[in-house]
Image 1: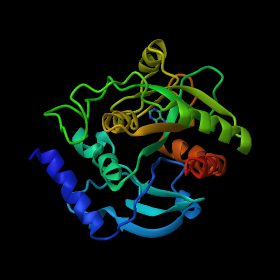
Image 2: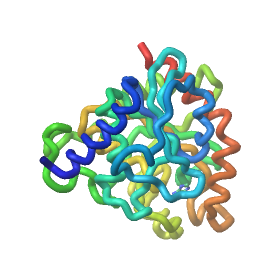
Image 3: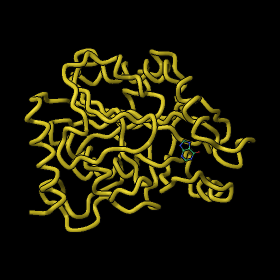
Length: 275
Ligand code: HPA
C-alpha cells in the first residue's frame, strides 16, 4: 500500500477508536479563531497526540486537537491548530489532517488563516473571502505516486473555491454586517515574512493577500472532491505597505481584535450549510 495512504488509514482507525462522529464540514482555525471552540457545542475532543503518526504543530498558540460537535445543527470537525510547511513537515503530512477529515465524512472544507494584505484599500482587521489561489511557490501535496483511493492523477483546479459556498459566505456577511473583501490568496513557504520586492512580485501576479498555509490544503481537498471555501483575516498590511516591521505579535493582536466579527461570520456560514 502507498505509505502516505497507509499512514492516513492508521490515523483514521486511531480516531475511530475514540469517536464515531461523522462531520459534514471540516473547519481549520487560523490565527484569530483560536477560541472558536467556545462557539461549538462540543461532543468529543481528540488531541493530536492521541492519534498515532499524526503531525503535531510546533507554533506557539497553536493548540493541537480536533473538536467534534455542532454549530447550529451542522455537524462539524474543527482543527484547533494546523501544521505548516515551514515547520519542516513534508507536504503529505501538512495535508494529512485534511485528508483525515474527509475520511471521517466531511464534504466541505472551510479554511481560515491570517494573511498579509496586498490589495490597495485593505486594512489590518479586514476579512477576505478567498475566491482563487496561487500555490505554485510551494511543493504540491499531490507529488509522488497518485493515491487513487483519494482522487485522480491530474485533478482539475479551474474552480477550487466552491461558488455556492461563496454565495453562502456573501449572504452571511450581509446578515452579520461584516464587510467582506474578495480576492486571490498566494501561499509562500515562509517562515520569514516577505521582502517588499517579493510583495511587489505577488501583487504583479494578481495576489490580494499572502500567507504561509491554506493553498496546499485546498489542493489536497479539491483532489478528493471536497467543496472548499476560505476566509483570510488580514492581520497586517504586507511588507513594504505596512510602515512598521512585521511581527508575529502584530499578526496575533490584530487577529484577536478581529475575532468577534470573524467568529460571527463563520458561525452564520456553518449554520447555513447544514441542510
Ligand atoms: N505574510 C505572510 N504570512 C502572513 C502575513 C504576511 O504578511 N501575515 C500573516 N501571515
